[in-house]
View 1: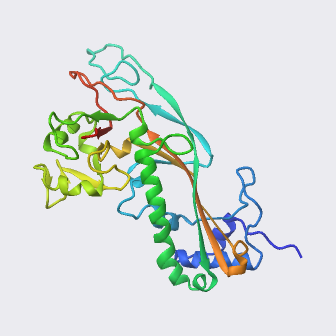
View 2: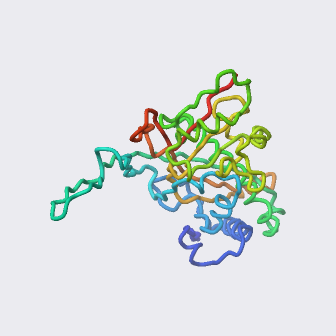
View 3: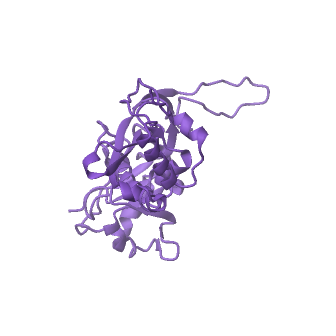
Length: 325
């Protein structure tokens, strides 16, 4: 008798899950019963290949980690693996795009349409394969206590590293590899590997949006930040701005060990996460394989720094401290 194939939309409407563990246990049960999607899935085959992760569990994995940078970025959901996103890089003081001007009474206003370009995002696949014992999976509470946190840890690292260092080929374009970043040179005579107050002042001077920016820094550099005059021990802020410690930043002394970033100026495009399991991959070991797949791309919104009026230097949403060696 032909088994019924349960599609993602069916599992979401047929049952309500209280925890990620319940969801994983139900997924395994459907696979054993022959009801889960088992054919090879691709971009052309619709729902084949696994269940869609319920939205609240996606948030549990990706949006609750204190160290995750993605939630602070501009996130655009997509149903396609390639998308064109309108991008407006015009400035309020420039000569293109929407402008405002002082007009006399009764004069005719001059309309100016937005100066939009189209940025192409081709989504890249990020996935994790986790084999678990059949006995462990039968305990939904144990799965819920461990699996989301384990997935969160590895996905956070990969996405954070892509946002900062991504090469733009087969992965997102990171801040440090983009043409939008400004490198601020070390101070004359500065000791190798140090961060000094003058570095912080120079970086703030080159930021396009200093009041809405965040310091990204290597955890190994925190002891130096703590000694700076602009560090506030009570709020753990630097020059009044929050600090996000991430191992995606370089070691102290290397370029990008501290970055002043307006993360809202970094765009991430992502498809709905996909979750699937198999009792066959490690059948001889009585293991159940869980696979979580996310497709995403990212890049700074600005393609290059801009020059404000009354300024002889450029500014950007992203300012990195150059190497001190």
